[in-house]
Image 1 (cartoon, rainbow, N blue to C red):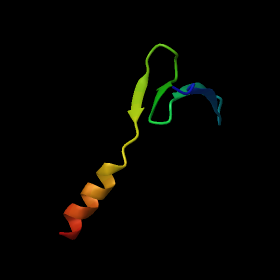
Image 2: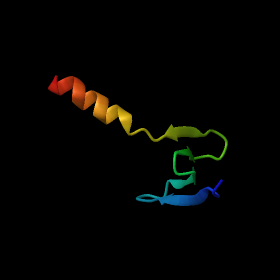
Image 3: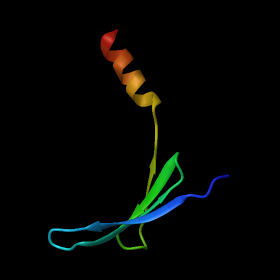
Image 4: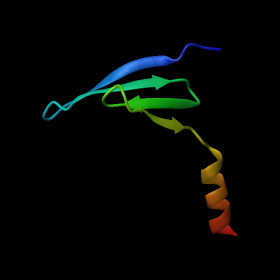
Length: 56
């Protein structure tokens, strides 16, 4: 298993702190305080299914 990418994004104008990100390629975890994390999972099938439903 590959190592996840870990990085921070500086939120500016005015300075609002940092956003911490852990990215595995298929999913990522994002936090603005280091305690509460939001898990985001990548999905490619949803667009195709929605597009197919509209064109039918």
